[in-house]
Image (cartoon, rainbow over all chains, first blue to last red; front, side, top):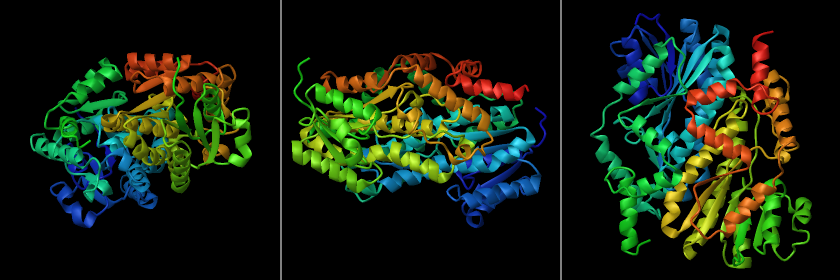
Length: 299
Length: 296
């Protein structure tokens, strides 16, 4: 495929998917504006070897002024923005009942409002250009939900609803919106980007044991999972495609399978299936621990 | 069905589903702690005729102290809460691109964090008794996104995701979590309580024409659709039913039909169907306005 170089702005590009996306695009000859909170610390490793194709600039998606300045930087440098990859985000582990107001608000502020800030900033340019692509990095957690991960699932569900609405709104301007549904990867949020609720961190959660089993299960499993390269490649493909993009683009060995199973099952069947899991990863680790605690009379 | 009187705490009981559900439950003999922001103004119309069954209590779901006080008052009065109905909610009409941070945060603070505050306050009491029901009033918009309602959809999608997780978390104590999904229902939401994003309200929106067409479409739909009684009596049924409750319950014919079709269609099929709509209701009014703009 011989494609004109595209200008793409990526959030959360200091590591993980974001860094891999920037480098994949650069490798294909595109221009990537890799944004991150701390370019002095994290920028050099991302740029290295692609100095002509990657520009690092500071952007904290929770701070509107830095989002606007990053977009202004990209426009000044390249005169246009063909695609934006809203990748910045983090996970939060802990039971719903123990989430504090600010813990949930902060999570939404990064994972959802952060996307709105970028959309606000790039849309005037994309409208002027007569087109563009907004690629929002979502997750299976935007489609299904599980215990100990409700805050994160809530934020990704919200991103899905928001993106579906946005897609209808900006289509008349030639702007496409797609959700990249990311499944299990080593650099996925389950491995590197998780925070714990305060209650859990301080060891006084009512759900301490099942949550810790969940965390350990994810850590054990993560070492066996692939790195971010295929996610980066799929997103680079989406940047390059001339054909219309679908609303959802699944990536990962398990993603389409889980979505297909979920779509065929009723809520009851799906809940019965995952509640019956006793594997050491998620969610078996959670349900197995709860079952043991019930037998021991702890719960 | 002869059911022992249940103690129900319901938020947003001043109007709409909340007020009608409160009176429906009272009529069936239950005890309802009906919470609202302004009981002096809105309370009497809600409890009138059911003074023994309805206790109106002040509670603003965005204020944790009032949430805790309302739950404490219910426990002091009745010794327990059998059912929590998270009904308080707001809508917000406006394009995603034009949402201000504060507008979105304020919406989430009511529709999402508001439910969380009640859950935190009520669950310890339900856990002690190893039983309870949490009915979260979602929407068909919790499963399908549409133009100009992206913020509302996001808040309800988030509520759905969190409720599904919560259901697993609370199952060991036999506390059930249910999402009630109304369609378009004729309530104040469509009229006096409709909140517009500033850009649209001030006539400055890039989406002004289609946005206004969509509002007119919603109101047109509302005018020919049923009022809140169906949703209210379904909530009352869920309070009474002893069988295990489902995770999701669509209520009203449009929600059932839309959610069934949505589930049976691919994303592409569903989108093509919406883009082809030209009716005067929601969302046809929006897509028609966009099509007319595109071909002057």
